[in-house]
Image (cartoon, rainbow, N blue to C red; front, side, top):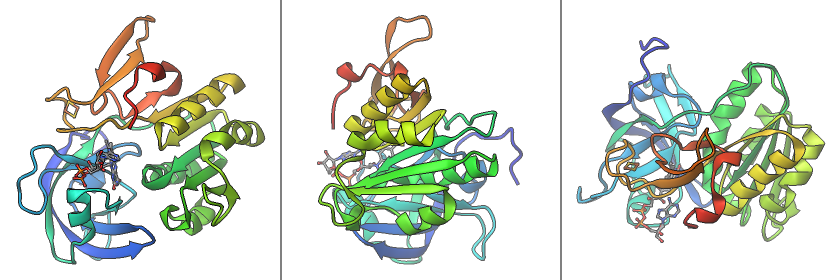
Amino acid sequence: MTNGADRRPVHVTADVVSAKRIGAFTHLTLRASGISERFRPGTFVALSHGADRSLLARRALWIHRVRTASAYGPCLDVVVDPVGTTTRWLAGLAVGASLELTGPLGRPFALPQEPVPCLLVGEGVDAAALFPLAERLRERGCPVHLLLGAEREDRLLSALEARRTVRAVTVMTADGSVGLRGSVADRVAESVRSSSAAVVYAAGSHATLRAAASAAVEQGAWSQVLVTPSMPCGTGLCHGCAVPVIAEHGAARTVRGCTEGPVFRGDRVRWDAMEVR
Ligand SMILES: Cc1cc2nc3c(=O)[nH]c(=O)nc-3n(C[C@H](O)[C@H](O)[C@H](O)COP(=O)(O)OP(=O)(O)OC[C@H]3O[C@@H](n4cnc5c(N)ncnc54)[C@H](O)[C@@H]3O)c2cc1C
Ligand code: FES
């Protein structure tokens, strides 16, 4: 068992114990002893190589849920959006397949000391990172409001599960197939007001992160956003994950998203200088 002090990432061979297609995504449960016990919300895992073991760059995945004890031992869930070669391979894996994973990587979310209202803004597959955060905030007595969005219903992540975990959920789809029509970026300012949020946590597109950061500043709230440039190594070695920020002393700096992030204070990111995916 890991004590609170040992949070260093580990490299493990994980195996798939469950694979489920839900909407556009595949949810994999992985037996990944060592990573689950070290996990804190906001951190991620990196996959070393895919189908033909030829990956030069690692592939990052959020941890959607951890179970430190289960019939299979310590497990974690990841959600795969099959957008390219590796994610399509991952989405097709069967129970029993094995993967090389390193994690947990990155800095976690900071949690409020007091049980203050929190707004979580999640879009598409990136919302995966917010579910374990919601649980942690709830354990601390924080009223949690979730603004959850996607292009369409099949890309909306775990909305039913969210309703069980948090105090209030607002669902939005760009095509109006479920919930309100529109994007979470357009709605976030209204949600910060109506939830009286003291802290706004956001995961999603550049536009959503930026809107969440700006709405928080306007309402006098803190924001923490998950910034996700490509992360070829995930461990601070390659410098391929630049994030432009304003440092503590006010100077413009560029830092590594994988080690200084992926969690950043929204008011510290230089949004105009960010490469937009
Ligand atoms: C910290 C972090 C956490 C992530 N968590 C998840 C997750 O939980 N689930 C998940 O499915 N994906 C996640 N991603 C994105 C995932 O790592 C990329 O989609 C992956 O690199 C694509 O690999 P590929 O080989 O399938 O696609 P490639 O063949 O490398 O690329 C296919 C297409 O995907 C685009 N692409 C590349 N990187 C990204 C990216 N980061 N986001 C969106 N599109 C991209 C490319 O521009 C290209 O059009 C995360 C990324 C980061 C940085
Ligand atoms: S991904 Fe290599 S340094 Fe960040």
